Length: 329
Image (cartoon, rainbow, N blue to C red; front, top):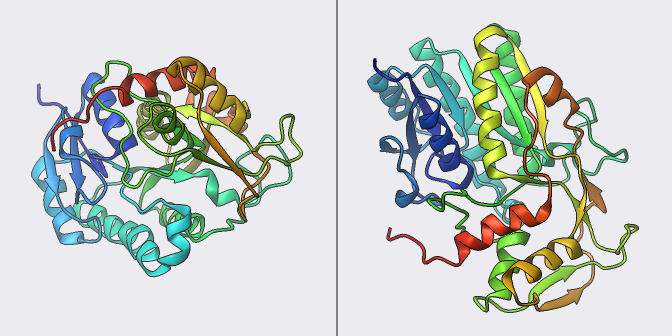
């Protein structure tokens, strides 16, 4: 039998490539659609790569028709918080216009099922922890505002009966494929765990630690780290949900556990066998003292729960990946 095809925009990226692997294992044909601006050709292993920009609606429509796609998983986006403040036009263009172009292509093909890669950045700096899906969405940066705008677009289309969508609000994605085939490789890198690993392994200078006087147990920020393979499993659950549920649905994806920056650095140092060199500095503007999810709704309605909940197992998979040379382009 022919495998049902799923279009994965941004399928050559970090999370997208892990989801492609999970889709293949589940009996789907993942079609990676990527312009390779930040994704990697070597990360596309489980289905075809179709090069293209998500803003090119005609190209998206052509690919959807060619493979007779049954659903779309939408990852393609610009995602650096700091860069978003300096490049707001680019972020609105890719993240919002891209979502609109994709929606139009789906409409032209009569395709309804969509899973959207959103972010906890849509919540901004909520006062109550853990964060539930009903918390006010008040993003404090351009990146979060563009993702929220895309959420509004998809929710409005669902309310009008145009699509059925699951919006997955990630907390801090981390780790790497435990088989060692794919992992996190950003240029430039901005995520704490790979930066700490690079610093410990001597591949970069000392890590910059922003803020040591937060009202937390050790003075550093608390974040909810979620293993990328758990994120991939959530996307399979979302596709299953769309078989029986119409409309728009939003879920937080996290462990519900706040882990401090110092705890992350301790885990990296222990598993790398070398301490992480650190330069301590003042707080960064916009960094909340703590951000962690309530995963209760995802457990209850999506049937999903994170399997990796201890930071050392997540860090360990990432270190194993970073110790290897990157695959050839």
